[in-house]
Length: 441
Image (cartoon, helix red, strand yellow):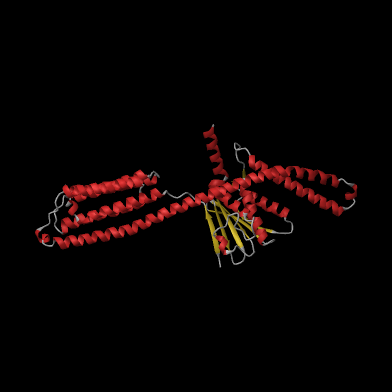
């Protein structure tokens, strides 16, 4: 049984206004095709005289407005004003068609309601009210000013039945279009609300990261003094003749000195990371060498717990070895070690234009109920206060434009981090840095 949870951090989706405009474009294509078909049937099948030239010009204008709308969508310049003008044009086009074909007596005049409902869903209150006023004015105008619809003698006797059928057809058309497009627009609005909620959640997460960074920086400052004192004391002990007579004790003190030095290096790294300069060009490093270095540091720290490594990368594949990237991979290794000591596997390869790093273990896997909410600092099967490592990793992956996937396998679990080379690749990053340096100079 497999279960997985993916934290996607791809390109931002189109705005809700652009998506709504796409729906209006589709509706307008249907309207243009429907008007053209209706005009041809009424004129050539039923023999009702119609002013073809101006009515076909209106249909052509609907197509032209659609092309303009598609241009605006590609440029991501759709606003409430754009939606209002788009719906307003549709109302004016309907008014002209009704004026040329019987005015308010035209059985399809109920199509006005479709525009009103769409305006109520898509527009601000003022523009929706203006659209209602525009449709009401158009309807009122058609009751007084229009070209009469002259039926041939053979249809004049069946006028009531013909118009009743047209009324039913118009009702069915409006109902189908409303269900179809209002459902789609409702989905777009729900997606927008979900996106806003996701942005708020990420903002809260980043605020938590800032607080943790301040806490880490303060702790690093505070730990500097006791670590320096421990280093001095251990150095004195190593020179004590009584200890030098006991090789076993001297070896343990040497190990302690090494661990203190490692703690001092970690504290120094935290302080440098908190205040590192931003104007220095990043240095590239081979991706294989970078990951191999992490594996070697792991093996040096955990002598008795093997780490199985399979790096399938070209030696000339270079990346920018950001400290946050190293820490993200290290956090996942630590989680895998907690789950199954001595059975941790690190696999790295290139997947298209991305670097893919997978860490797997042979433990019990993640509980199914947590897979959907992994990456939160409070969501951990290890108890309160844990889960910070994966939480920080998910945010690092997101900042680098990548994707984090967590899955349970038949035995154990696997965490896959995918980093786009456009973000961490040495060539791409160097070009971006040079562009930024030129623009700031």
